[in-house]
Image 1 (cartoon, helix red, strand yellow):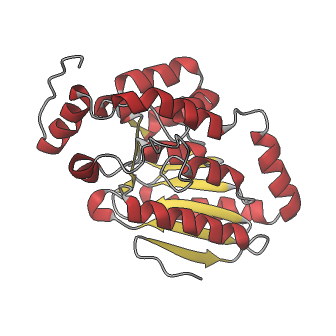
Image 2 (image 1 turned 135 degrees about the horizontal axis):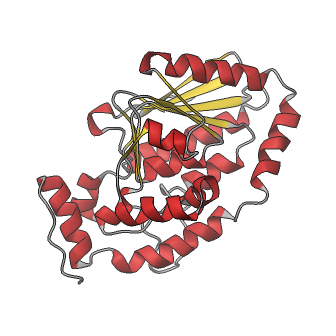
Length: 266
């Protein structure tokens, strides 16, 4: 297996456990972690059918807090679409969602803490979500002066319906695990100390079934969904004009300075 600096990969029987390891930053996605995330997903894909289920989780108090805003403030977003070609790099945060969808194994998100912004998107791109009672969920993009990305504009609606998606996306509110369970965002809520046990038990149950049938069932369940590459292109169209607006820059500065933002509509 490959060696990684910002995440770990552990094989347990027929399951692969991918753990994001930037706990001091709540597992925020910088360029380095994002590239390794893409690499490890391709690695586990190539391990099918030895690896039949993938579990995603985070080290520490966060599942994934989305894009690294400290990097965004100093250098601008590294995840913007190429302004010349208007194409996709293929290894941005945004493209993690279709990669999760495309790999042959079902993906279980074991949400141990905050799943915020693109972290929420990654959880929702997974096939099944189990939450620790400490988990929190937020489509916080709006509070950063941006729009949902990483296919969240489609996945929230597909999973929870338009009204819930609109509330989450337009308020940027933070919700607890019980709310997420009540609104269908997660399948179950368990004690923090039982999260990985429950995820591994579910993975074992799934992996006991014929792997080719599991693979095809995963893709069949996705067949009625929108093409996430198209969704991401639409999100880019809506989000690109917002980068570097005064309000978007103020949103990031206010977050980093721990103060209330002042917006001007510019």
